[in-house]
Image 1 (cartoon, rainbow, N blue to C red):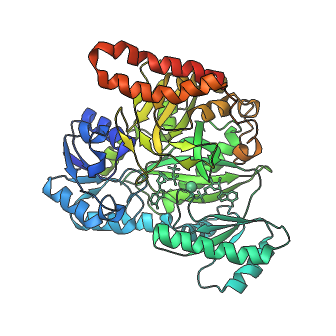
Image 2: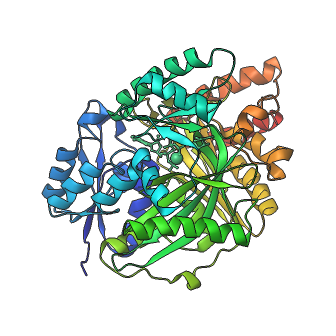
Image 3: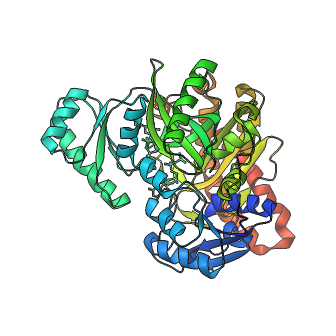
Amino acid sequence: MIKIHRVLIANRGEIAVRIIQTLREMGVASVCLMTEEEAGLPHTLYADEVISLGVGPLRDTYLNQDRIIEIARQTKSDAIHPGYGLLSENAEFAFKVEKAGLIFIGPKAVSIKAMGDKIQSKERCIRLGIPLIPGVQAEGLSDEKLLSAAKKIGPPVLIKASAGGGGKGMRIVEDNGTFAQRFIEALGEARREAKAAFGDDRVLIEKYIQNPRHIEIQVFGDQHGNYVHLFERECSIQRRYQKIIEESPSPIMTDVLRAKMTEAALKICRDINYVGAGTVEFIFSEQGEFFFLEMNTRLQVEHPVTEWVTGLDLVRWQMLVAQGEVLPLKQSEIFHRGHALEVRLCAEDPDNAFLPCIGTILKVAHQNLGPGQRLDTGYREGNGVSVSFDSLLGKLCVHALTRHLAIERMIQALKSVCFLGVKNNRDYLGRILRHPAFQAGKTYTSFVQTFAKDLLPKTLTCEEEALMLALPILASQINVVGEKNGRVADKIPDVFELIRSKLG
Ligand code: ADP
Ligand code: ADP
Ligand code: MG
């Protein structure tokens, strides 16, 4: 067994802050990275040590593998935690970290290679007898062959990047009379987008399942051949194929279904000797069947949902496993309690195709959070939100005894949280939570499109609108005036809230 003393976090924002919190508890030092534009962000202030990556495109900063490994050496770190996104599912990076004599806090490079790629992971699932969405992989097939395969699968079909993530490189092709033409066009688009985003233009084709749910299983393995699951999360509320609301348990879960889905997930783990935290994602059809979607070989954005319902610290478990320790609990010792919900607060415009928004955060308020409410954020007042990084401002997560109580608690918690100055989806998330279909558990991945009209904001009077526009400016000016007017500045979120509550 090894003892890790210092961890380099090869990530940023809320997840870097989250990792530091556990490291602190464990008495482990943290080293964080930053770019010049990130000065003043919480992760740069909270870490024990911060190293600047300067300025430049991601490939020169957070994706610069050799430089990050070099920094780990220079800072005498003994392990690297990759967080999620960025280098977390890059097998080459995991391999280089191992080769440099450092610990990669995640699975072995071979596991990332086996499961990080959608085509390869599906081939493995076929061998294991795990149900798959009907489809075909496009490797080495001509466009004509692919078109005939797509016709055989039958429209609508989904074209996906094999190396994909975050919904990038996906195209749906429906049967609207010009299927063949649209399919060939979409194939080109998906390949180009995949090449640009992942440097890999391999794609696969799947039957597009209508009105499914997204249900995933959290798994954990240690280096001694022990595997457990930490139940499911349902993440069906999505926009642009990306999750915005997650919960556990799934509103439709039964003991029988859970036993089947967790067994399928653990079968994969056993087959690849999986080590660390992982998530096996499934599509659940209206007919009640589940199909393997992909495996994410890392800590997931929505892990707080699982932390609430199990009472466990997933980052601590990752650390223990990386040190070669046995999983702290056996399956029979892990319990699911109550209901947890998470919403992703993103700097984006729900009224304009959810396009990311930028700006300076003038005011962050979350001082009124109560019991069973948790906010994970990587921003504070004065920080800039730029296009260089993900639009995630924060994750608000609640826990209560039942789904109904968790929804009530989340609606309340959302009111206590605001990020003034940057357009974001807070009110939109509130409208989803209050929607009768959401409350009835009718959560399908098509929810956002199906209820688009119901989710539009109510209109404001001219005076209210003027006040809305003036408040952020007012907030910034009062902040500059200083201490004396501090109390006035504190009132601004309340006034803002009052007006916003009128939006419904
Ligand atoms: P999750 O289920 O954890 O939300 P996602 O696939 O949506 O998983 O990805 C998590 C985060 O990582 C998102 O912020 C997404 O934009 C980013 N991401 C996912 N895949 C990649 C990738 N290959 N390269 C860079 N960022 C990625
Ligand atoms: P990513 O790596 O971007 O997360 P996934 O394969 O996990 O890609 O798919 C992301 C989302 O896209 C899913 O959660 C689901 O909502 C939708 N999706 C993916 N494949 C299908 C499919 N075959 N039919 C219907 N929806 C799908
Ligand atoms: Mg996915």
